[in-house]
Length: 256
Image (cartoon, rainbow, N blue to C red; front, side, top):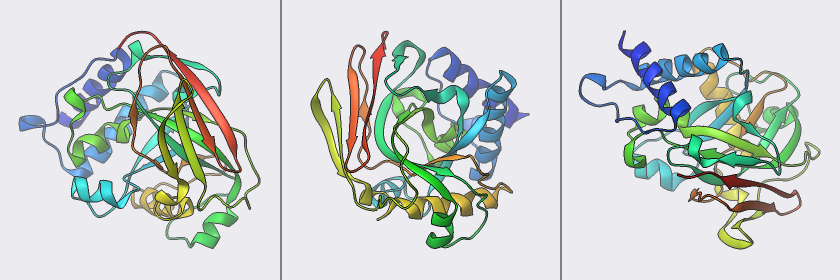
């Protein structure tokens, strides 16, 4: 079956760190088929012992939506084997096109499902933290269509989470600085995430419900990128400082 074969191909690309062709020609898929491929792709990780621990949101900036010609967000699944310890190290030899983005992460204390209001979403939050997502499209030349990126788990590859803070902490407009070896490479604000990151959490509940899923208690939700993604290089220290939330970091080794 085509979707099974494509899910296997994308999984092999992620495991080997080698690029794979875009889904064109006989491998072209619809958005609905791409979502099923993503589900099967994550099933491969789970078969190897990983657990699904949450979701990440993508296309959370209006500019990115316009660039891709879409009117809604996308989402991908986070698994336990993607979780990079704060202050830890990643080997870039295991990636294809690794990039990093500053984010806000929510930890849910209650189940969240379907169409909810921002107040209902906030009521389900147990804690908030600064975070960084390591994205890595498995496609050649980092080029992809909407179905391509959905099938590839919305390019999700790794994430780092900083210290947790009380759920009432206001994260709607916090300054963010991401640096490589002490040199700032991106400056931004959490308000770039749909105007306020809580809107991404509302969207996560809605989009998950469209595929018959809910955001369970204990889930981590990455709200989306606050700045453009920056390509990673071997042998650097990556740090993100977020106003009122503190900082987090990781380092890189290996060769691209």
